[in-house]
Image 1 (cartoon, one colour):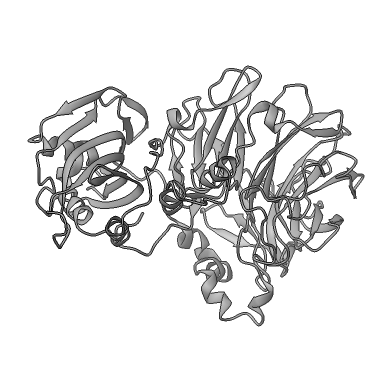
Image 2 (tube, rainbow, N blue to C red):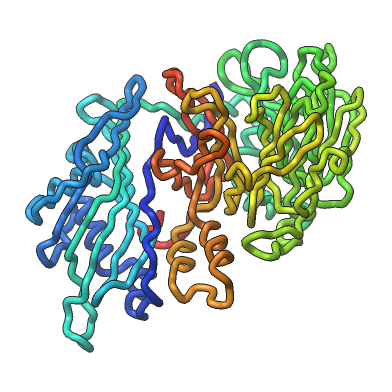
Length: 562
């Protein structure tokens, strides 16, 4: 089985606390404290890892949520989460507090702890911190010594204990509250990194995929013509009909696309050159789908501003079957397909982000940009792909910086509707009314004005209607800056709120009657780092869809940064 390590959210994920409102600009010494990750934070981290004294210089009022209900699990794994009722502890219960943060299994292995300041609020001679604490230990692979990971949202109240004007400034802790925590433990690997093992049967594929883009930037003749940002180029499907999933992988300019066909022993062999799919052009998006209804998987590749459709013939080779050309040179990023016009074949929607290279276009206004390239709908007319964007109403709302479009019949009327995810602003929900689309995102409450990157439909709560998970950027640095009282004084309140939303994280939008309601906090799926996309899938076969979300661009490199 082909497997890559992803950020995995099984049935639920750690909840993020609400952003505290800042009371004013931060004092210089506080800014220095936070940026340097020094003093109390370093002591806190050392104490959490069991390698230092407790950082509570004054008796601290400690509180934790009560209870540890098991909320999910599979063979060899368990997931527990805090209840909502707080319990006040004595300062002497520091050991219990550490068990809450790390998990009762911490004694079986030395924990590695990461601490991140999410928000800072000046308060009465000091400041309040919202921390995200992550800890993990490898374990010994047994039931008594499992591998485990713990995630906590911790609110800490620090006050200056040194005299006014005295240097250095010293801080004392007067309160700690664990707002939420979650722990996962396992006795065996649920996901195993097998990239090199899977690629071992093909030296060329192993060479291409086992190193980063920095290596190829030094080796390609003209790396400046490639944009290696924002590639959505991977698709899965049983190409040869042997019952095993294969992978079509899109690559940047100068590197060939690959079709990795899975072998009986679990390795793969790249057959792209043999079957006619080894394009050398910059390919940001790929799709495997039966475009002509003959039962075989066909291929769609975004070669810059052109969507190329290749039909798979009886011999397993891919022949040019059509193409769609955008009205300008802005590249296609995400590619999706559905029978939009109801004629029995699949049509194509291409989401476009920037021009040929990232940075060629500057979004304006930053929080609600409409100066990006237009997306394109191509109707499939017997293998001839016709630009029907304007006729279908998909040119409404101005050109946005779109990364993905995903089809789903959310209104249950039998035709596909379209949700478009836009970076730097509002997303769009296009309701299909007999082949013409109308943006109804405001009416249904799904604009989700953030740094949108991906989305997935699912009836995850099994109530008969489709819900929506939207991935955005989470940035602790952005939250610390944007939520200060003095942030962007030239902007109005609505604009400041929109900019703050850009760093808030992901959204679980649940259909409730005629609208969607944001249930991200209750479900604990807000914080997904820099989440490029998401897919609902029932990983543990319990009848409920779980979430897999790939994440990238971790902030750093700073000691203690997540």
